[in-house]
Length: 195
Image (cartoon, rainbow, N blue to C red):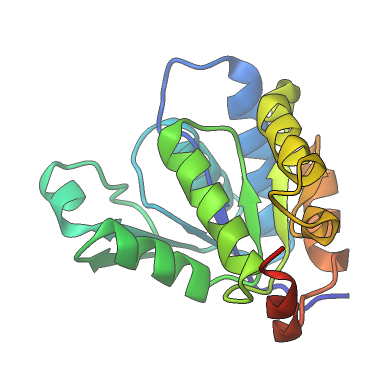
């Protein structure tokens, strides 16, 4: 069983999405708080980013938000987090969020969320991030992406072993179970990076 003290959650900033996504974000946040797991996220003040953070905080948990200075200047940051870390760039933001986390969970989102998820999958493929990555496939949102990843493996753009980089959950409860039980990778996985 993995020792999990902090989890990076990627998620949408949109406010116009189906309530089912907000319900999943809220439930995930409450579970993180109940399990005394610190949330690491992008410190956004709206959408699922806010929902999961508010749920952690209302459950007595802690949240570290990481956000570039230009977003703070725009007033896009959540002002009630346990800790707000301001960085210079999006690149630094993603690196620090990964560095602070014992696992990643991706809730549904747009280009930013998808980009973060694909980057952390790439880092794990290269042995740069070894911790569990869970795709929380609420309402089948990630089905097309998972199909694309399967196609990449089928057509030899990736190895079959690469399908072990990520795990898929359909509920927040299953996502938490997976972060505790998916084996942490050894850096020797780098030998499988090329095909």
